[in-house]
Length: 93
Image (cartoon, rainbow, N blue to C red; front, side):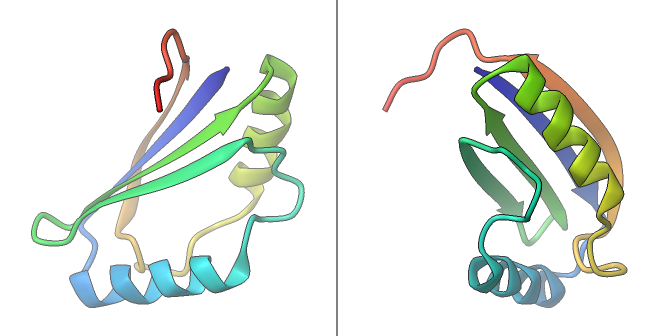
């Protein structure tokens, strides 16, 4: 399993909430072969982490390309400050 972690900073709490609702209503983005998606928010700090989990390195590569081609609504989550990828060494439920 592999994870892509995108960090956004400088978001407004109200706009973050609006974006969360839009994302819930829209479902998974087309072309992103994700196994799971988590959105972690710090409304007070204006920071958001989007964690997308992929089953294989090939899925990570395809998903990253699709996500890079998309852009979040202007200013909705703040500005993207980083994108990192990791191998998931342990996953517990």
